[in-house]
Length: 296
Image 1 (cartoon, rainbow, N blue to C red):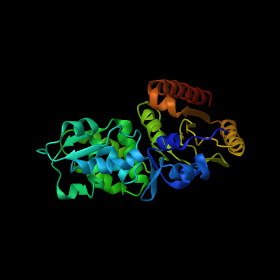
Image 2 (image 1 turned 30 degrees about the vertical axis):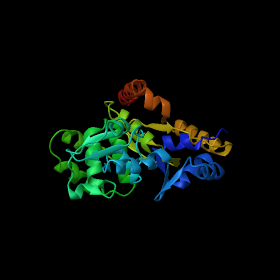
Image 3 (image 1 turned 30 degrees about the horizontal axis):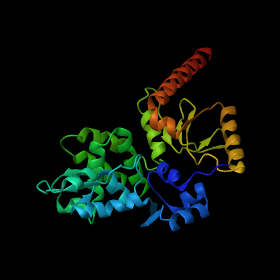
Image 4 (image 1 turned 120 degrees about the horizontal axis):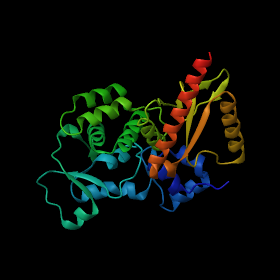
């Protein structure tokens, strides 16, 4: 089977990944070669791209701190899309040369001592900024990633509850929907589309027994008996994985479940088409349930 390149894998995993995740997808030899060639760098417990790692130096060049998605990546939180320019906060009265302004995505903000953690915004400030300002799917991916990496759910909820001003209501919605069970930002993006579909109620990584173990799909609506798989490069890397997944999907269908599979490209670039499919599925499954109730 064709293996995903390290660069592609890292992008789809959210710009930052543990070594084990990259090795599973690309193979140990490819990961080691990328490290040796400088295409991959170690940042704490995670691996990332040289461009993401260089954001620290970019922030230091204007005596600023990383913020938003750049700050999230710096602390090992995966993001839906890696920012094309380093996102950096500087004090309101700081003068920044024109070349640096073109090179960086600058925010002029006066941060308090608790808002800064070394060369990046603090975890709380990073989440508050991302949840307030990023598009919903992007913000949900950051919230899910933070929770997956150990940020306490109760702290996230209290943080959002206490926010005031522009974006506070948006932040509270994202915080309420954040779920650390989400496997990666791609799955978070698919769930963001699902949340726009009336009548669809999906939960990440639910173990299905019907009555025997049928697997743990990416997203599951138990009431409608619908499962959604975010089919990225990890779907099947070899013949054994293909065989295993085919058997799992067949068993789910035989037990009355509807299996939907969505590619990374479809979710990222055509979410409206994904939503249309989901709306049609919800209508059809609801009609089937109603017909079953009438027949009973």
